[in-house]
Length: 227
Image (cartoon, rainbow, N blue to C red; front, side, top):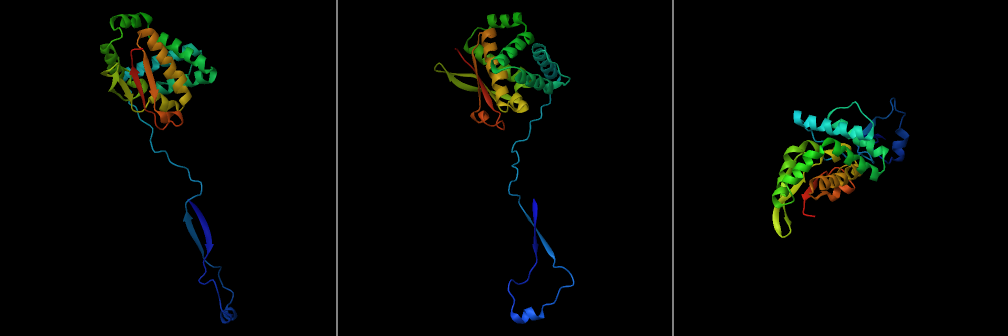
């Protein structure tokens, strides 16, 4: 708010008789203070930041991925929890171009997830309706620490209805990093490549259209597909 000052005056006009009788006032005229809205007020954010209560499993997974990214970039940080992961990703975004950023993340994911385990999963769960729905449910349970609260939704694939979509209500990484570029180059693109190459399962990660210009709407969807 801002205050504007005005001199108090009982009349804007005076008669000749009134002018003759006017005498100097013993005290200065009172001042009125009127509160008005500032011309350029700052708009408050409608959405408050999400609070995540990470359990022991979440913290182990977050710190493991963060250390993998740090080892790949060659730059370590002293932060802990999700802040450490975001800091490691920020360093990558500032040190490498977009193509290199994606390569860094893929290398970090290969460090974080042992190749023999991924190969075994790919062998036991080839691309099928069951596998796509299984991975969707798996994501909502075991990767909530990375992307935030999410749920399985249904979509049509090859003329059939499948529960192969993971709807992320408010992506944790996008909200914490507050950068659409980091979302695309350090999450969406490298994750799609890594999952397809390691699990043989194509996935399309689709951020909300509003995210292209603003990060207040952090929703997105992951769709497990055939090709």
